[in-house]
Image (cartoon, rainbow, N blue to C red):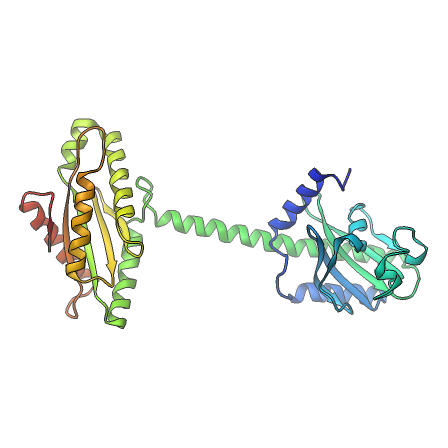
Length: 333
């Protein structure tokens, strides 16, 4: 395989990136493995290094002061080209690949280098676990095998990291789905219940006002009966998106149930809440829906020291019925 080709390098880098390991803090499992590598190989220096785009970065080091180096001079760059075996350099001064390397002629004065590639399940060499010495010498077959075993252990740690990250992502997605209304793509009743409790607690703690809007699509049953449920679903989605876009950035819009929606307005008194509700009512009347125009009735309530979130909802619901009794397409407090 041509490990230097752009396609191969892109695949290798993509796999490395999937682990999210680069520039992470020290972790004891990796520190333990390099100490074990140094002990087994009787080497004064060891490191776990990953081959990044323009550099090598050391996740863990033993007897090595730096945490990264240019990729162009790294031994690791050569080691990953033979991912199925340990690259052993007994005396770097006598190896044409490294004789003029600044890590050999100066700096750490590397003579012995042994690097076992860390190969992902996809077959990509991510870097090496390696040992180094300033003395030219050999390593035994058992020592080289031990390095390969440790390299596999590092990959095992990386897989745990990647699997855990994937699980967290899946759980976050599942949580998001459980709080999102599938039809309208806005928060659902469960999300509303959680948020209203949070906002009530914040309002009581800070003394700031809190208001609530409950909005109902007028005569929606007749709309469904006249144009069918698919058209009704499209209308619900359109109204939900209009409410989300029309509310202020810090407001919280949710589908409360059926054709009813709720908008939580933090730090908002009744007068300001009425103005928001009236604007949303006007937006609904101007919404372009193919079958026929839709309007909203909106009830508004505000939190006082005598009420809790349950009462806030109950009073907004009562105001909503008052708006309907007044002929719909209006706002009531």
